Image (tube, rainbow, N blue to C red; front, side):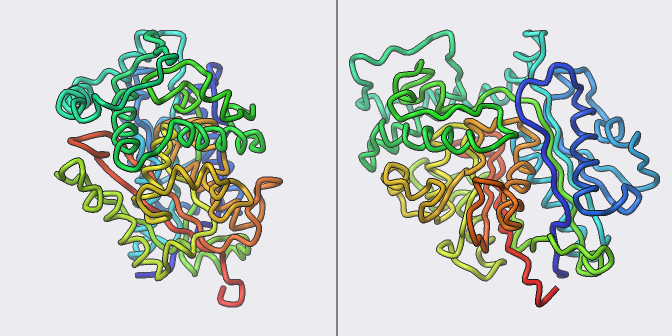
Length: 417
């Protein structure tokens, strides 16, 4: 397999963008990534375009990538449309990497675009009410809620029923299982969220840029205890993109700001018991990724992990091996996962505060980590970062995500380039 490099990246602002279509957001990200790589659209030999809900929101179900990107001047390069829920962007990236690594092409483009905000509430509701997804979540809650009946909220906690969501109920159930097994506290979960909101204040592309204290997070409206509103990802619009290329492409375009793709792994859902997290898809993906990269978790300088809720970050840290099981809460409370700490996590603000435009999320992680490895993330840059890890999960089946992805990037050794 050939070496693969990230030649260029981009990300639009995440947030409410009612004035733009999904296709416009995708074009914006694609153009910026191509410019960052110093290549033209005609140089991309294959394009992967990820989107999840454009059909429900805008009524465009097929050939989304063609409608978005052909106006840029794409002429003959195949455009492959990807739908993989929250892992759409990281799947598009994985497929682009595989094309280059296998020698099929020298340059590939991956784009993820999503528009979730609309004035038509019925359309937005439809995008989150797909029957198969709801059936999986409902069965999970029915089967496993009795395991946490003894994990009670404090008397003063009042759940805001107007914010209730079965998806957040499922995250809350898993959080309570973690609290029961490891003694994790509500305050520790809030510390994860406060950290991410503090980070996002430094990110000009974040949906929210207001720092929050642990007390403010705990005092916010409760969606599903122990999850308060700031602990959960918002509804977001946005796009991100990456150009990947071979060593020949690296030399051809003289790209000295490239970063190395050390590993890109996808693993599918495992039919495991709920207590057997060690045999889950994300754990499998992480082990395979570290094997591909030839490094260990202790070598990671900065990570972007899927935190659709604050508890989600904790689970991803433990399952990727960045900390031991049960350690994620104390780590956040100690400041070890904050900018300047031992292993900074979600310095972008994470999904909770940067935003979560579903199919764009995975490529947004690649954008963020590339900026750190280049030393170009501004005042939030993790100094001298050498290796960076991204993890993402999409969908939900049985007791875990339908797909898990792990990517490891490394700083380019200019002496070898």
